[in-house]
Length: 295
Image (cartoon, rainbow, N blue to C red; front, side, top):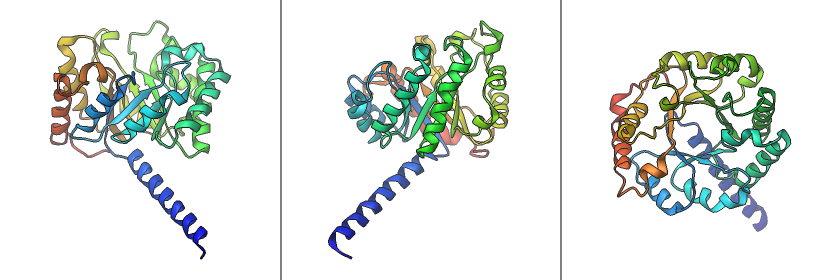
C-alpha cells in the first residue's frame, strides 16, 4: 500500500469513528434538553452548558431569513460541549415561508451544518393554529423528513399540546395528527416531542403518561419527549424546572427532553443566575427520582 492509500485509509477511519460517536450521542436513552434562542454572547452560554453535571442537548433556534453561515461558529462551539438539535424554523415564522422557500432553507442549513448537528427538528409546533394551512405545513415537514432520511440524518418533529385551549377544534393535537399526518410519514421521525406552556393553557396539568402512551402508538418508531416548556412567571420558574425535569413517565421510548425555552435568560451566566443551580441540582438528583424501566 502506497503512502497516499494509507493516508486515505486513515482519513476514512477517522471519519467512521467521528460518525459512530455522533450516532452514539443521537441514540442516547435519556435526554436533558435546553433551548438556545439567541447566539449573542455565545461563550457564556457554552460555559454554562459545559458545567452541568449531565451532558445536555441544546436546541439551537435558527432565526428566520438568516443564512446558515451566520451560525457556523456558534454551532461549532455548542457542539464541543453538548449534543445539538437544530430547529430549522420556529413555528411563529412557518407561515411566512412558501413550501419552496422552506425546502431551500432545509437544503441550505443541512449542507452547511450537518457535521455539527445531531438532530434536525424539521417541524416545530406543527399543529399550531398560527402556522397556516395544514397541507402546506405537512408539505414542508414531509420534505424535511424525506430529505434528512436520504442523507442519513436524524430528525425530530414537535407537536403543540393544547387540550381545551385551541381556537379551532381541528388543531387539537391528536385530531390534527390523525387528519393530517399520514401514517407512512409518522414512521419516519426519529424523535417526536411535545411543546407545552401551562401559562398558555389555563394552567392545565396534562396526564402526561396517557399523552405519551398514545403518542407511542401513533409514532411507532420514534423516541418521545417534552420538546419545549417554561414559564414567564418568575415566582414559578424553579418549580417548573424541578417538576418537568423529574417527570416519571414510563411510556415506551420516552427519553425526557424538556428543552427549557428560557435557558439563556434564566441560566447564563451560570455563576450569577440561581436558576442554573436549580437546573443542575435537578439533574444531579434525577437518576435517584426516576425509574429507568420503559426507556
